[in-house]
Each structure stands twice: as structure tokens, then as C-alpha cells.
Amino acid sequence: MLMLAVLTMGFPAYAAEPDRTYRQENGLLVFEPPSWFLEGYFIAREKMPVYIFGTVRDFVAVLGGATTWLIEDLELSRLEKAGESGKTAEYSLFLEVVLPGRTQYWVFVVLPHESARAWFDARRAFHGSKAQDYYGKTQLELETALKQGLKINAELRFLIEQGNVSLQVPEDVIMSRYHFQPVYDLGLGRRLEVSPRTR
Image (tube, rainbow, N blue to C red; front, side, top):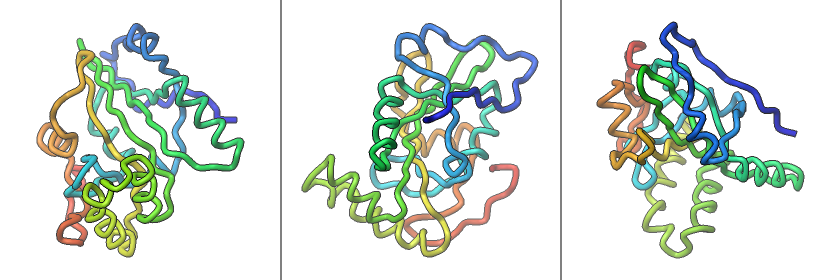
């Protein structure tokens, strides 16, 4: 049985109340993610990602504010049923960030796959014959990264601000707004030197 708990990271003195209305309207429950997800690397563009970032925990640390991990009630039920049948499944998590006068929600997809092939197969199950065009190149790049010790455990899918999904690609937002730099260039197939201040 999955345990529900608050995962908070450094509540500052100015921390405001979370958006209870948004939580209720979307059936969001407090959730404790697995440690391998928090300590894992992630991509931040659904199709044709350019970089790998990491770790999820390091990214959360640069956001400031009070943070809480949330999951949709129906998603939790689906995840529990998959676990009971011995299956692993991708699932979405909301990272709520309460800042002065506003609340953000960063939506991650948790990736439990042990290989780039398994990651690709999950996309092919949804996209069918289009998967090769959408994700074939990325699969090969992720395989190269895995050989260098970089295993992808998450995808940052989008950002919600003021109740609206941002049209900006998360990959661009986290680099420009938060100066959170990548650790690996997928196109070049190599690790990047990253200053501790940007992680």
C-alpha cells in the first residue's frame, strides 16, 4: 500500500497557504514519491528533448517557496491496482510550489523503466506507428546516456501558473528563469560541466 505523506522542503518564513481550491477541483492528494525518483535524472521536453537534467531533488531546491508533492486520486487508484498485479506503470505527479502571492504546479511523469527500449515501448503503446518518428531518435540517445550512467527516471511535462498550463517548454523555462543547467547533452552524447550554483 502506498503511503501518503507531506514532503516539504524548507518552508520559508513567508510561506502562504497552498491552493486548497485547486487541489479539491483536481482531486489532488498529498503523496510521497519514491526516493529513486527524487534522486534520478529527468528530461524536460516531451518530444525531441535536447538535454538531461538532474536530479529532481536538486531542481526542487532551486524553486524556493514551500513544496508539496501531489497525485490525482484516480491516478493513485490506478497506480495501486498496477502494484497489486505486479506491474510497473508510468504515473503523473504534481509538484506544488507556494510562493508569495502565487502557486505553481510542475507536472512530472514518473518513469519506472529499466531501459530506453522499455521507455520507447510505453510510447509506442500509446502512439502506435507514429512513435518511431516522435521518439526513435530519443531512444537511441537515451541508450547512449544510460551507458554513461545516466538513467532517466522522470519527465517534466509542463508548468501550471494561475490555473493555466504554460505554453513554454519546461526545458526552456528551467534554464532561463531558474538557471538550472543540464548535466548531459543528448545530441552530443556527453556529460556537461555544471556549476554547483546552477544545480
